[in-house]
Image 1 (tube, rainbow, N blue to C red):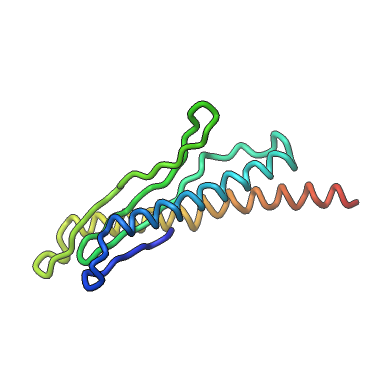
Image 2: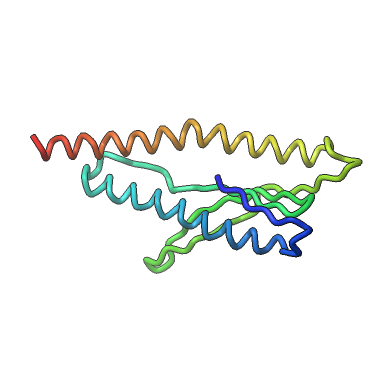
Length: 138
């Protein structure tokens, strides 16, 4: 997860945070693809992973946005995408309103997924790479 924010005082709009998050999200997706490709090269057919996902939060002042990053293949060209999952605005009069609560529930779900499923998939790939490397050196 990456968090990109802009402050009112800087005069920088939220779309700059979104652009920075898009680059970071693409890098996270690319790293996951590279790890899966390396795992497949080292241990063909042993890993049947899922399509990579990454997440980001963009903020400007009282606006918060949760984005999902993913890639698609079009004519053998990888296209990097991002879509908004949740958007909310905090105001002094509505801090605990449903929108804000739902936003943080979604962030909690992402963090729970990242610290369980995502970490487990990465560990599985690293173990396969380690075993492959160990076999080649013995």
